[in-house]
Image 1 (cartoon, helix red, strand yellow):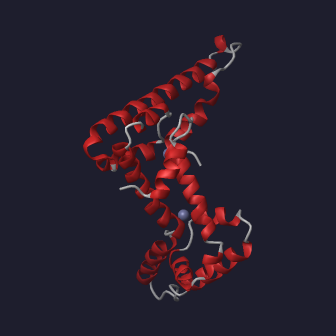
Image 2: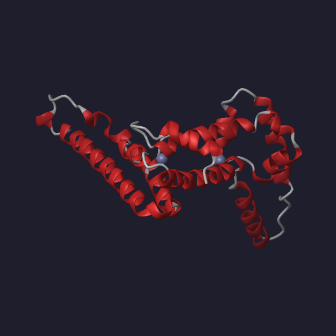
Length: 223
Ligand SMILES: [Zn+2]
Ligand SMILES: [Zn+2]
């Protein structure tokens, strides 16, 4: 079974592009989700209640702050502070303070955007495997790409059972493309390191120029 929206973004992003296609999908979904929290939906009671309860992580607070509606964010920050203040009471002992610290830690490490982003992304990991199962041309498209960041390679493996009867082929293709991007990045890193040998200093630095940013994308994904 395909999710309509999922398939569209998958078709748009699984190409010969250089970056992890799942990162590109994630960035688009994240942007859309974040925008919802500053749009009209913000005034709906159910949304407000959830934002008050979960809040935003620093990444998503910054993302919202970079958007146009500062007033929407200010209103949400204000009611979120009310919710957090309710947890506070004057601690009467170190034991009670520890308890409060634990509760505060729980309440300040959640994020409403992260919550929905994770849920959406799990649908995408499953749908990518389902597209592989249903569309025989998808294997070539997957292999024409440049692999995945480690987080997304790991997620695609985790949900590969959704490729059903083709799961084995799917895993084999994923493995092939991932080994290729690791080997390519290794080559670039080698060129970069070799260039730092004084005997090679006059030689131009070709592909190795992007070695460290490429390694970063491979380790941590691309924002
Ligand atoms: Zn990625
Ligand atoms: Zn977040």
